[in-house]
Image 1: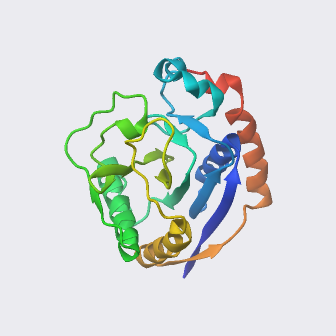
Image 2: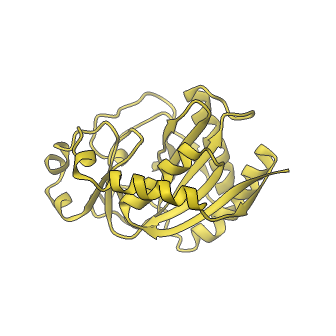
Length: 235
């Protein structure tokens, strides 16, 4: 049976977190990664103009900011866990965008059920005009208690998919209306469930494995890119 990687990164800096995801995408090593943010951080979508930051909320000047490699709206990362899936475009993973989101969302919904959380897919039409991701509406949003809990964004190579998303676990300073799971033990309970579903779906074993020395070299290169002002303000 094929062995895929389970990677717990822990709390890390914003450039490091993005550098690892980009390295995993380019290396193509199938990985389920769980990580956190060492400091409160705003991640901009790849295509968002930097000029929108202070226009949207002047207090954003006091937080760390990084530009993601994926699209979508800005996310304020603080009390949350973040996960990324680096998957090969092999059966049963659909290659087309809409079926791919639907497929992965089904896995996520299923992984929450044993923990007592019933998620649902938003559906309907998109409204992605707001600066913040959690104020946007996307058909692939996952709702809990009828409010958006999880979004999701993707980047692809010809052979590999990166899908990453955040699961808020505490209130957010920018909006009291944003949803979160008030469950301090959620990560410890959820990760094993998600591992079981990935293993069953793709017929693999997920094993804890560190980054290789070659991957660490790539992380260092990408980290320099993601922490540069030129990258942050490229749009």
